[in-house]
Image (cartoon, rainbow, N blue to C red; front, side, top):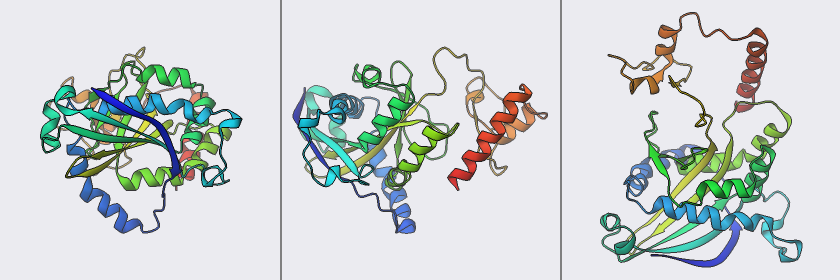
Length: 292
């Protein structure tokens, strides 16, 4: 059984990545430990995150008389802001196998935080995703996990309607995303872009009697909508080093192809109309400049 503390807290999140090398290294050290807590298909993480997303959505659209002036309403703090709520799960009732990850605690407390909620709310509105549409995708309170073909080891999930993809991030990556969020938002408003459409960033703090684990999860719009028939998927990095799937290309491997597979399968490239090619070339070049 899941119980919720209905009180929603607000605060400011530290997005400082000034000590980049040390912080980046620490993220990689902690990653295997944190991912162990969400790797099980029977984990309570998915339902907990869905509950948090749904419960926190309307908090960004409070009425004028519900606002209280403090540090969270100061200009420039929008990408530092977080909204959070807490949930308690009965491990034995909700998920027996999860007890192995919690040292057999009877209960597990999970704090869900929506990071930079006002900016992501505006981002969703700008690309035509209302709170109601976003809520519908998470209202079943479970997610579909699927294989991440990349080397990052991150865990990936889809909503049941396949409209959104969720991916775990390192601490460093989450803070970096928040640090560039204002410019990222501005780019979507003022430029044509094919950058991934991030529509949410959440943290999960899992508290048991012996551990305190923090997991970051980014939500993006799924570019591969259910109506599309997908024959091949290429993970392109712009490199030739270890960028090839070898051996017999089975059906499964056609969803994990890399740079050198692309050049072998399409030595002359893919033919597209000239006007689309010219527009796409400009957009990609501009996106690359923005990311430098």
